[in-house]
Amino acid sequence: MSGHILAIDQGTTSSRAILFDEALRPVAASSQEFRQIFPQSGWVEHDPADLWASVAATARAAIERAGIDIASLAAIGLTNQRETTLLWDRQTGEPLMNAIVWQDRRTADLCDRLRADGAEAMVTERTGLVLDPYFSASKLAWMLDNLEGARAKAEAGRLAFGTVDTFLIWRLTGGKVHATDVTNASRTALFNIHTLAWDEALLDLFAIPRAVLPEVKACTDDFGMTRPDLFGRPIPLRGLAGDQQAATVGQGCFEPGMVKSTYGTGCFALLNTGLAPVASSNRLLTTLAYQIDGQTTYALEGSIFVAGAAVQWLRDGLKLVREAEETDGLAASARDGSEVYLVPAFTGLGAPYWDATCRGAIFGLTRADGAAEIARATLESVGYQTRDLLEAMARDWAAGEPLQGLRVDGGMTASDRAMQFLADILGVSVDRPAVIETTALGAAWLAGREIDLYPPAEDFSKVWRLERRFEPSMTCEERDRRYAGWQEAVARTLTTKV
Image 1 (cartoon, one colour):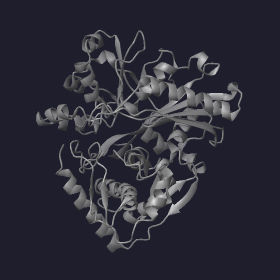
Image 2 (cartoon, helix red, strand yellow):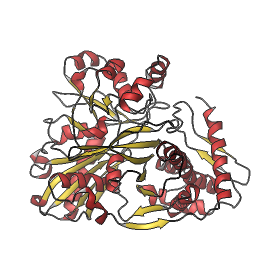
Image 3 (cartoon, one colour):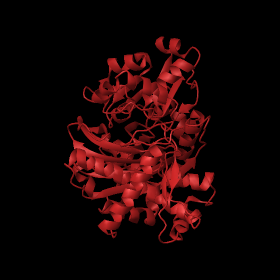
Image 4 (spheres, one colour):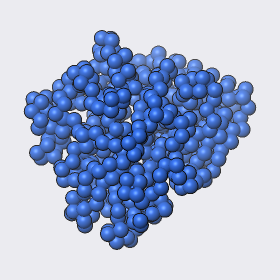
């Protein structure tokens, strides 16, 4: 079979579309940033119109740049920022408010109350998640309780809830399909990862009417056909996964024990644990990796809220650089001997700390330090946070033995300096693939696999290609000393509450 697959990757700060050929080679791409809305401290929103417009524009642009006959477009695969929550009118399709983004912390008090009532154990046992504003359930509850008339309309079946994937499927199909996949559903804190169904006890806990929920499908499934007017003819939607799970697929992490880490706005490390969920004793998340060909695979996940977003802060907040790409050069000029630590807890800290109320801090500054040292500390913060995650994973999965290597992807991996420091501070090899947009690659493979265009998982290694391997060069003594400084900085940050 021949043809092309369009991968739509709707992310936190931009939307992109990449067209892949029958050999899973990218042939054309388009991307577009959109507004980040901060109504007040700790609140983060997106305009749904921006999400949809950027997706439609980049999809059309990628097809046009490829110069292909639309008849050769065989299917669409979709991947998305997870947990971000939308609520819209089923009749008009209009959202009731802006999307509440996964980074948003407005529901911290609700999560604290539920935790104080002893609800977290049930949430974790059924969903593999912790009680945190990060996940969709508390965001949806906030919408229903704070938007006039929303709860009554929801109970009457007049409203539809969805994470970004569900909202885009609704728009792509002209309102004919209200669906999600198991990976996105597993990030709502409403989905039971053992029964693979919406959970009544969780719906009761968050007071969510079942009528608003989408249908849950496998990652390779029939998600409907696009409206004919969007691309000139209806195109089948056949693959779907949340961005981190799509990256896991795109990195070829199909074997238990394989780990990938994606560096975008945040950083997310996933460890394939096979066909059975592994409960974490170290505040990691137990989640679904993917469901393909009727088989469900689980993962341990560590979530860092701020990675590439810290570089954006250097550019847009501090204005230390004009372009994000300049950060490497600025960091390279930092003075030897400087030990500045940036803890980028701009919206709290994720795994393994899960503190929604602490905020970012810089430690170790002297009069000799300036923009270069802050830039270097910003890049290094990603390495330190990744070590936090991988050490927790090793304790949960490998009885404390270090994990053997890491596959990385995402825009921030273009920084050789950041990737070398990552290998140094972890003490393991770091593999950067030839296609660093592995999130889109995974979405494309899922769609192509569903229509038998692409090979099965066991043959994916023939497609995955290494671009560069970074080997650690730092001594064990220096590695441990610098990491101890990071741990002290985090400990001080955790005592700083807003």
